[in-house]
Amino acid sequence: MAMASARIGPSILTADLLRLGEAIADAETAGVDYIHVDVMDGHYVPNITFGPVMVRTVRRATELPVDVHLMIDAPERFISEFAEAGSDTITVHLEAVTHVHAVLTQIREHGVRRGIAINPTTSLGLLDDVLPFCEQVLLMSVNPGFGGQTFIPTALGRIDRLRQMIESRGLQCDIQVDGGIKASNIGRVVQAGATMIVAGSAVFSPDVPVDEAVRALRRGIQ
Ligand code: DX5
Ligand code: ZN
Image (cartoon, rainbow, N blue to C red):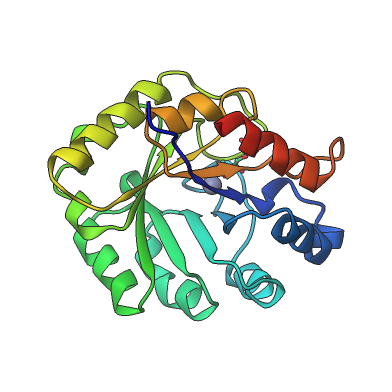
């Protein structure tokens, strides 16, 4: 079987915010491919985190792509703010948007990569007509809202099915998987077809240095 590979992006959700600049620099030195910012509004998910100010702050701290995951209701209200703050990718949740094509068009008009996210049991069929209008699909492998949750194993079959949907139509669309990814399961996630990995607590935790954590994830892929 061909050797699979994937880009790895740490989520700053579980980083020590008092030393965020150092945490991002450590991750960059360790060779991560992008930085993932989890935006939560307390409506779409039962937690509140960051806004455009944080995206602007992360933008200043790194040359790496800034990948913004909006877990907010009616995200069309804030696309301009997040684009102007320096997002390279903006991902919105299918379940939180009424006019999906319109919001993806809005993101593209800002010259930003378009992502669509779906929750662990939202039907993949709903993506059928969306795929031509986005550069990445984010499959949640936990219920969105918190870092440090356990990977839901049915995500593996969903990654495989989504990969087939994309390949059979000859589309170029990244499959990003987010939630509960560790060195112990990243291999199966990538083998199933994930091309982008989000890792929060596996990279930023008080227990393991960032470079060691990233090395363990890379080893898990081989
Ligand atoms: C969950 C977020 C994830 C989360 C990942 O709502 O979208 O990005 O921070 O954290 P871990 O890897 O700890 O599950
Ligand atoms: Zn996320």
